[in-house]
Image (cartoon, rainbow, N blue to C red; front, top):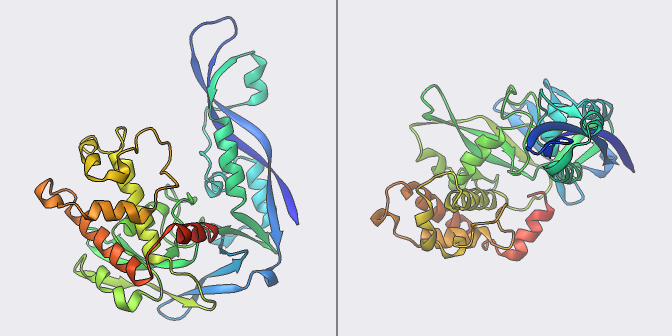
Length: 349
């Protein structure tokens, strides 16, 4: 059964005021609907439990429709479907972040007020915002009295901690790296959004080869130990239902996409474009708004790891070592080919 939910989405508009020539910008709020599917808990059995060092339950993950679902929380309490619908109508930071949309602005106006002045809209992000909202809604379900978010099977992450950032905490979180949880900006960890480290912390750990699946932990724990002088185990994963390997794939994706962003001409690092010719599969990265979906992450890492970066720059030595570790782990699970990538996409990656 599907439930329509009223939603207010903010967007940017570039427009020319009525009887004027010069362009202006405006933040606008658009009202519409998304559709959230409702499922019964009996149809979404618990696949994983996350417990602390004392065995106390910290979180549960459910399996339904080939996706792994995590409870959405606000201030440490599960959000109910009624609350989610109410928040969505009020342009909630929590709901917009969960859906992957841009966040609200203080200076925005309603569409009714905006269009009352007869502006000529030159460009806007409205369609993009609503597209994100609808895609995000497909990753949310109402399950009895809770709201669940599809975020992939759980993995262990090596998260920097301590005042000097020289401690690695082994924490559990979802393998999904796209979902913008409600709290990279403001949450108290584990209290708002979905359980686990923030998206930015997960991305950092994964690109450093520090996202490790439960079946890898004993074999690959040295990846945590080699980083810093102090490693602390925080929580553990109990697997109740078999899950596909997610650790090395999560790492491959994080590092490949990080390299892609840096090697674009408009990338994050001005000095990186000269590196593109050394990584052939990224040579055509320019002009793409998103990471090319037809470019396997493994291929990027293979091209990158094949280069002797020590003779070119000292800045990428660690990343090259990480790429080789990730490739080694992919080989242990028969690699990540295009069919595997598509299958993992259906599992919420």
